Amino acid sequence: MYSLEQFANMFSDPLRMDAYRGAIAKYVQPGNVVVDLGCGPGVFALLACKAGARRVYAIDLNGVVDFGRHLAAANGVADRVHFLCGDSRQVELPERADVIVSDVRGALPLHAHSIGTIEDARERFLAPGGRLLPSSDTLVCALVENDKAYREICDAWKSLPQLDLSAGLPLALNSMYCEKLDPAHLISDHQGWLKLDYTVGAKTHASVTLQLTVSRDSTGHGIGMWFETQLGDGFGYSTAPGTGDRVYGHRFLPLLEPVSLRKGDVCHVTLGAHFVGGNYIWQWEIQAPPTANRAAVHMRQSTFYGGIFSPSYLKKHANDFVPVLTETGLAESWLFRSMDGRRTLDEIAREAMLAFPQVFRRVEDAYSRAAEIAERFSR
Image (cartoon, rainbow, N blue to C red):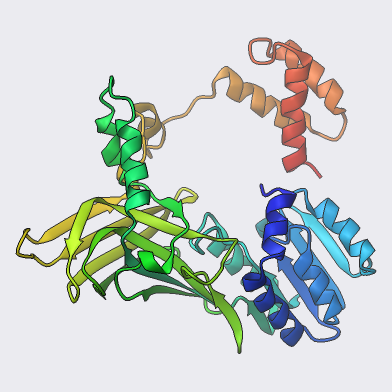
């Protein structure tokens, strides 16, 4: 969940907000119904009201929607903005929207359930002929020289001379990192490798091979990624290095080892993303031509190799596994069943402690867990 400080960073970033503000002002017409998807404190909802929206449904999983109600009242639009706390995929609206505004990305648009959330909203909330803001995102990549970031990854596994931690390095180099890249870090042309067109339905799986031409003699340390968004005619932005983006940052996929490259070298880079179990598994592969000092390079990597999967984890995710609840699982199940509209949280907690003393040793422990469940799942 985002904090108010993080939300403030989002709505105070001119790169992001100038584009959204302009698009909302152009495409929201007086009398329109608008959905603000992943609304946070409802800044887009307020802008939609200023543009003349008759009704805005502002939806977010975060309890910050309660603060959004105060902002709506302070801006004189409390009667036009309906804040809904919950998963938009489980929300029913009484009417269709003319415009859906969203920013449910992480650092990249391929983030958790973002694509499924937008697709569901398009199918269930958007009126025929309605508009999505954004209408599309394009993921972009380039080869990167960033010795500092690469050394930080590697040196962490060499930081204790009395211990050999080197076995962890291959896992670390098969991981994705958040980095703030500068234009000077880019050592090839940059290319869009995946366009997510939300108006027709974006895919959650992709694998694309590109040919990236090296722009100067350099050392390749990895692949950098960012995105470009289209909010409508004349409105959009790029989070590319050097654009001043303060919200999203960049993603860095390190290579298994640095590669010396010459100006004009053409490298074949394959990028893949696969949505599995609520998260993305990333794959990257690079082939670089031979030089006078080394043979041709071919490296194939994946965040799957960087994951730590215990035998127990793999066993419990097998399709033939037959699960049986532990005592804690039974206690959780009991808490859900006990929320039947007849008992208070205090009563539920006291009964839970008596029924499951090995799980809840104090009433406070049972109350805390019951309150967490109630906050997320109760009406």
